Length: 157
Image (cartoon, rainbow, N blue to C red; front, side, top):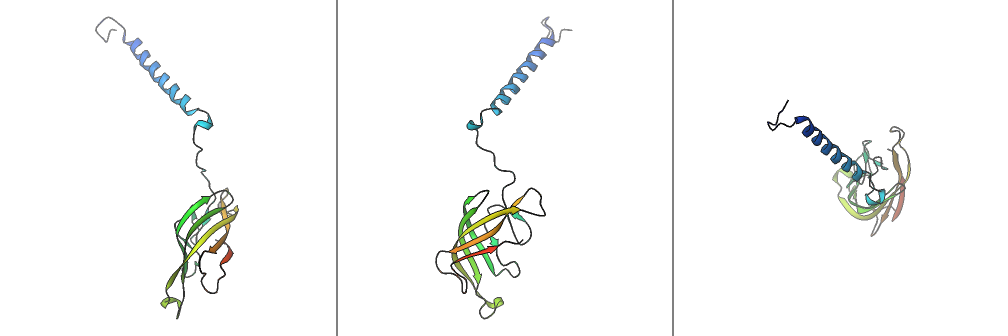
């Protein structure tokens, strides 16, 4: 049956269209199969995380609560320089309630700090996920009383 009206069969035109589509698909697959050196490395779908007070995994959080019970100690304005499989480093501010005369009436005071997360271990409740288990705070100016300028804590969440 002549669909074009010029005496040619419509079938060869359909085949040419399919061939063109297959060639385009092949070209797209070839581009995807380019050498790894020509492509940027994909992001790790399961990076090491830091777990917060609410058992939520975080990667490069801008804020992190250190005092889960009362919220009187919080890292804010975190700028991550590195976030790797073994350690993560950031600068930020440790906002600490001075609790004077008591915590509800106290004032939050800022302390510039360098933060290092380390010692990744498997997260027991999430198979296949690693979480940082140690945090180090290095105060770059003064430290809140009675804390030393360089302190390390275990993260137990």
